[in-house]
Image (cartoon, rainbow, N blue to C red; front, top):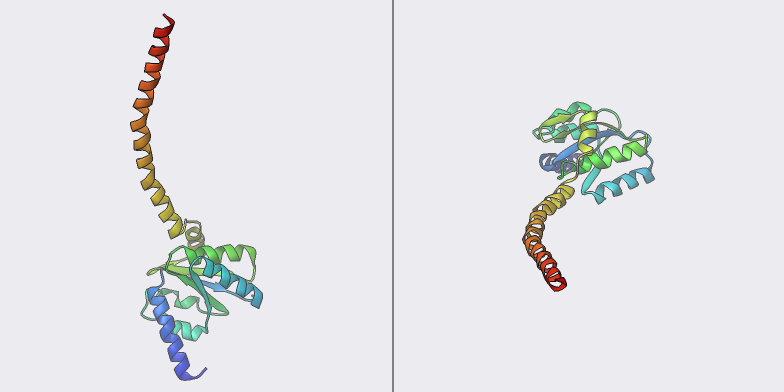
Length: 172
């Protein structure tokens, strides 16, 4: 890779770090090509991306971004996952690391806040942005359903009362 390509790479990574909702840094020592492909597919399925990059380029790219606090994690065979959804990258990384010993989550960042391994795991246990939206829509629809059932309940009770009186009057 020549100098111009490195500068372009650093520029594109700088944009990624500047706009990402969350970043997860991992060691990937011993990860096979098929395992890496599987991890990338899982990341893509939840709206996250997984990149392997030289540490020196990553340190340059992270300067001046909210994730600058992660620069000391870039040692050894490092990869990072990122997404706009704050939960997606963490969830995909942690789930894959549970199944595969070759990926070890080191930490991450959420905006300007640095996250430890435990905090990344806690973040991964939260529902994703799409799941939260679905729950919100469900909560918004539920009161309308409740209002309709409340409005229909008195008429149903009146009908039962009338049928009881009507049935009792015929027997007399």
